[in-house]
Length: 530
Image 1 (cartoon, one colour):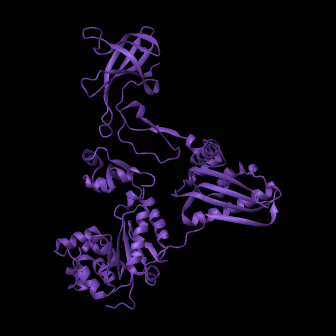
Image 2 (spheres, one colour):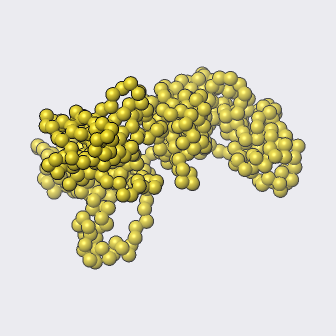
């Protein structure tokens, strides 16, 4: 085994509530109410991460969502997004380079910072960590920081150290590091769960228990990971902190030697800007959702154009189609001296393998279902949505999709037209009669129910008054009992009736019965049959 050549100073930052706290800017409830992210495992929804309030109420990662709602009925859930978590962690690492240029993500919820040679700029190691902790707190993140001589030792102390408080510091001396790590659990060595379980089953539950073992014997029984991680933590095997590459620019500009003013020259300049911007986005694996074009004239005036997309794009031709409709609004005056194109909102582009044979057949037949020269239906639909969104606003373009709820007005929801489809469970039972026209929300009516002994069914309305007109009913079918999902709210139950009046018009009525026996029932009209 070797020894330290020069002492290293490594800070490990751990964010125990990272997947939830990063959402707090968009979902303020993540700070004030029980909140959890969920994912799908083997066909069922499972809790992936929780916030402190949910954890205090008994929820934990790995718990089925149904069990969690039984414990905390009002828990707010949000789909887990590991890809977005990883990208947000990279952005946080770029923020942390204000303390040291050598920063990289540590797993899925932490950072490594190599602060060797930087601590004196902040008044020492502890002062640097205090400033780092304050900065992270200002971002709304709960953090635990540890300073040690190796990434492995800092990681272990940040997550498994016994000291109270958010900051742990240790010397870079190998002997002191070895003594400090001896009492920590073997999970602090960044081992896979199955390796940790195997070590614990043999009674090797602490890092110090691994010190006497020969590396060969340890590797023969448990694989190379325990010895390699132990060497890294003690500093006998080097583990560099590799800085993230600098971000590619999301803003490109052109300054013209001679001011431009013609339509052709403006179009050519914008096309060149789009080519450069899309190259940068492609290298970063991103696509633009909103872009801004600023044109500065020689007299100091400027024109600003903004265009959005329905999905992340990085194809210059498609983006040019969106901008070309707006370029006529630019007033060049006596000439444009500079143009700046920036990607204000970007998203990760998920690559999809195209079906080349189907694409070729569509191009040969010329029968794309939306139209276009050999494009797929989805691409042409997206192009149409981009044009509509830029003209009317993307909030005005939506698509109704099925939503599983027993209440009819909740059985449909509006979503972005190109959003990923949700996986639905088993459908509603077949053979149930539903109206041709459904009111967007039930309307209150005055109704009188039949008394027992009158025409069947008992409890159905004898007549009702809607919008000032009285309707006497000739026949009715029902009731059909529908209730709200039990985990959403304590809503009253509904008894639906298919009723026909004396003029042959058919209605869908329901009686809403409160859970309070003393409260009188209320009648509503919900739809019309043909």
